[in-house]
Length: 51
Length: 315
Image (cartoon, rainbow over all chains, first blue to last red; front, side, top):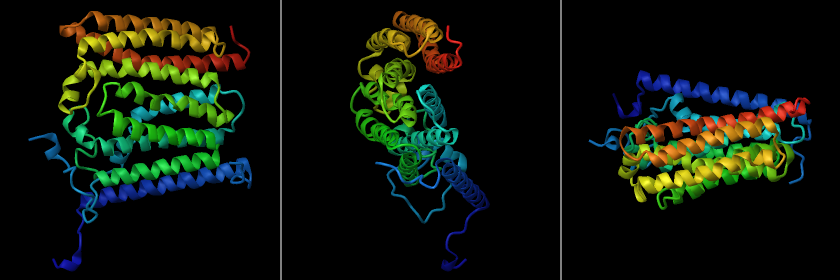
C-alpha cells in the first residue's frame, strides 16, 4: 500500500458510515416535509412575523 | 485497568484523520432518549392544556424542536461529563467513554442541534417559546453541567429547573405568554427532581464518590439526604395539588394528585425510617421507581382532566 491510498475503511466502518448517511438523509427529508407542511399551514408569510 | 483506559482517551483532541466508529444508535444514545421521553411528554401536556388553538402541524413542529433541544442538551452534557461518565458504572458504556464517539463529534452534534432547534422553533412557532428553549439548554449545559454539578451538593436542586421548563415551553408555544398555570407545572417538576435524584444518589453514592461528584449523599451523608428527601416530598405533595386548588385543574386531577402525593410522602418516610441493610436499599429503590411513575401519572391526569372539561364531562 502506498501513502497515496489514504485511510482505508474496514467493512464495519463502511457499514456504519452508510448507516449514518442514511440517517442524515432521512432527517433532511423529514425536515423538508415539515417545512413544506408548515408553509401550507401558515401560508407564504411564514417568515414574516413580529420579533 | 480503568474503564476510561479501555475506551477513548478523553484528553486527546478530535482526530479528524481517524474514521468515525460511531453508529446511528450511538448518536441516538447521545440524545438521552429516556430523558427526552419525559421532556416531550410534559411539554405535550403543557401544549395541550394551554388555552387557545394550535394547528397540529405547528404543534408537532413545536414538540419536535423541544425534543431536539432536549437531545442537544443531553449530547452536550455527555461531551462535558465524559470524564465523570467513564468512572461511573451506570454511565461507563455511554458512547464517548466507550470510545465509539469522539468528544469533538458529540460537541459539534450538540451545538448544531441546539442552534437548529431554537432557530426553527422561533421561525415556525414563536420566539418566546424559542427563547425559553434556548434558556433551558444553556441552563442545563452551562449552569448545571459545567458549574453546579461539580461544585455543590445543591446541584440537582437548582439544575432541576432545566427539566422543569418543558411544560412551560409547550404552553408558551400555544399562548405566546406565561401565566400561573405553567408556573405551577414548572414547580411540580422542580420539587419532584431532588427526591427523585437523591433516591438514586443513595443507591449509587459509591459511583458518585468515585467520580468526585458532590452529590448530597456523598457530601452530607445518607441520613442528611434522607431528611432532605422527606422535606422535599412534603413540599411536593401540596405543590402537586396546587393546580386543582388554583382552579386550573378539576376534581379528577385533584384526587389523583392527592393519592399520588400521599404515596410519595409514605415512600419518602420509609426512606427516612429504614436506614440500614436491605430495607434501606429497597426503600430508596421503591421511591425512585414511584417517582418516575408520579410525574407521568400527574401530568396524564392533568391532561385527562383538561380534555374532559373541554368536552363538557367535568365532574
